[in-house]
Length: 297
Ligand code: C2E
Ligand code: MG
Ligand code: MG
Ligand code: MG
Image (tube, rainbow, N blue to C red; front, side, top):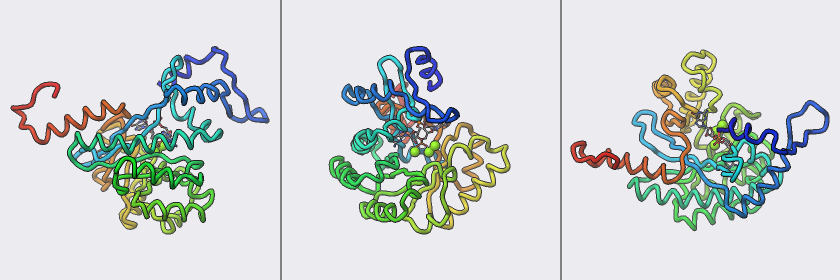
């Protein structure tokens, strides 16, 4: 759908400003940026939720919150297009605070339907992480939703940690005081040093889709995944494999001790009502004997 929304825009008076020097990538889409401010006022942003499942049982353990922008004429604008703009103009602080709070509230409803504890994972951008209001935003989300801190996972990238490690250390320790867990997103793709796994209070590694895509065929990707799983085991970290699309990938990872899976195979990002239906269905599958199950329940 990313390709589609891009195709739809072509030739519709898009204004693209290129970086100085001719070779760089397009930096800013001014029409999109202007539309973003209006989109905030019109409430065009929404949250999708992608299941994170247990690799063995395939039971949903939690969800990652993924932001969507439903533009009235462009359709779904993918986050890869609007997050970088929001990061540049600072709107990410507003959008991110909303996403965090809304996701925490949503998790409460998910749990009511599932009738068991779940967790919610939320992406935190570098600029949000550096913002001096961030801890207030976090406290507000936890207090307003009534969630336990431990039900919250905050996803940051290696880059976020490396910009200012001293500042990162203090923010991370305050996050963990609130019992929130820290996940390293897109693990292995950024500039970093393994020393930060020792220095910072990290709980989860999310193996980037780039290392999963060519499994089980690729020996190199297999070696990387095995090394990450081994490292995580010895450092007592959880691992989530991102972008799992095939049963073969799932089996490969599960056999090597990867505990959590996130990918199209076990659930695409979905609207909250669709996630609720999936939880309801799995709850019924557990407690209602097959002969009493109604179609569509
Ligand atoms: P991410 O945090 O690494 O999220 C995972 C991305 O992989 C999502 O893309 C998800 O839809 C996609 N994905 C999951 N499983 C599969 C699969 O099996 N196959 C394929 N091909 N893709 C899969 P999405 O939703 O387009 O988000 C892209 C990125 O945008 C995210 O990467 C994250 O960096 C950023 N993002 C999304 N929502 C937010 C947000 O609320 N705040 C911030 N700061 N960033 C966000
Ligand atoms: Mg993420
Ligand atoms: Mg990721
Ligand atoms: Mg990624």
